[in-house]
Image (cartoon, rainbow, N blue to C red; front, side):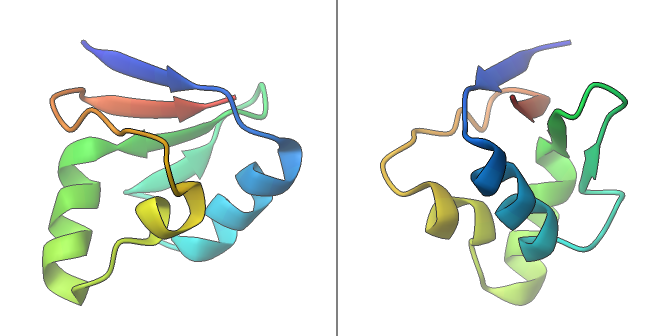
Amino acid sequence: MSIQDIAVSHNIRKKLLRAVKDEAVLFQDDDGAVVVDVARYEDLKADTGTEPLEDLLGEVELDTGAEFFVFE
């Protein structure tokens, strides 16, 4: 399992949770980290034509080869 850990502020984590409502794509774990299933996120982007994570994160480079993004 490959994971890309990304450090973000508490406010960005809250914005991520609001940006993607589908819990199969993005959820908050017991430790407060926001976890994104990359394959499902790619499907969401294709279906909606939007890029909610990229829009919020700006310059942060997401590794689409990872299985999960973990925002802490």
